[in-house]
Image (cartoon, rainbow, N blue to C red; front, top):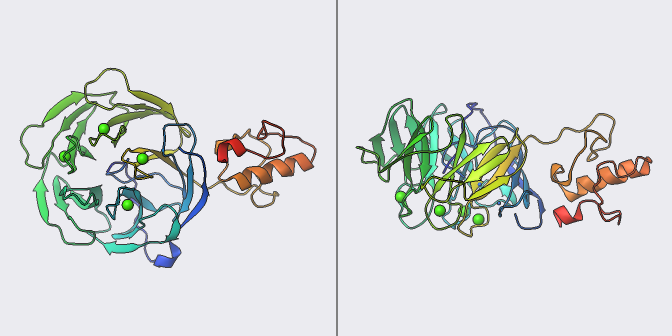
Length: 328
Ligand SMILES: [Ca+2]
Ligand SMILES: [Ca+2]
Ligand SMILES: [Ca+2]
Ligand SMILES: [Ca+2]
C-alpha cells in the first residue's frame, strides 16, 4: 500500500496484450504500495534485499500504464496491477504471463488506494476509491464498496499502512513534514502525530524490517532513509538505489514478510545504427544499467570486436564474460 500519481486513463486493450516477462533473475536483492506508483516506463528493477542492485528485472505492460502494487491473492508476495481507465489487470506473479484477474472498479478519473482494509487474515489487498475526503472501500477485488467513510480533508495527502501491525491497513494524513497516523477509519484525533523528514521529501511506506508494522522512509534523489519505528532520530538504514530519475515502488516481492525497493524506468531506446541489444559506447554504463546479462554481453562483445576494448569496464576479471558478478 503506498505510491504517487499520474493521470492518464487509456482505453481499449486485451488481456493478452498485457504480459509480464521475467527477463532476468539472479542474485538476491529488494520497496511499497498503497498509492499509485506513478512515473512511466515498462521496466521494473526490483530488489528483495537491501543492496544496490536489482535481482528481478521485469518488462511489464506499457510505458504509460498506471501501476499499483499489492498482494492480490493473499499469498504474502506483492505483484503488479496495471490500471487502464477503471479496469485493473492484476497479475499474481512477477514471473510472466497474462494478467490473472481483470476487474472494473469505480470511474476512470478516480484516485485509487490499495490496502488490506478488513485485516481478515487473508492478507489480500483490495481497492478503495477516493473522491475528495470520501473513501469507497471494497474488501473484494471487483466487488462493490462495502464501506464508505469520510476521512480528513479533500486536499489531504494520504498514506496507506498497517501502522499498528494488527493486520489491517488504515490511513495517515501528511501535511508538510507532519504525519497524522490513524489506526482506524473512525475519525477523531490521530492516534499518533509526528514530524518526519522535510516538507519536500518523497515519503514511502513499508514494513522494512518484517515485524508486521509499516513505517516510513524518505527518498532524496536516489538515496533512501529507512526507519523501522516512529521514534524519530537517525534512519535505521540508508541505501542508494537506482537513479534520481527513477520512480520508486515498494513491495514484498519474495513474500518473506519484509518490504523492499524497486524502481520503474523507461526501457532503453535502441541506439541508431547499432544492432538490437547493443548499447552505445558512451556515456559510460555500469552493470546495473543493463536490462540483462545478454544485453551487457552483446554490448561488451560489439565494442571489443571493434577494437575499443572494454569501454564500459564490464569485465572486471578479464574472462570475456560481462557483468557475471552482477547478474549471477
Ligand atoms: Ca501475491
Ligand atoms: Ca492496522
Ligand atoms: Ca516494521
Ligand atoms: Ca521481502
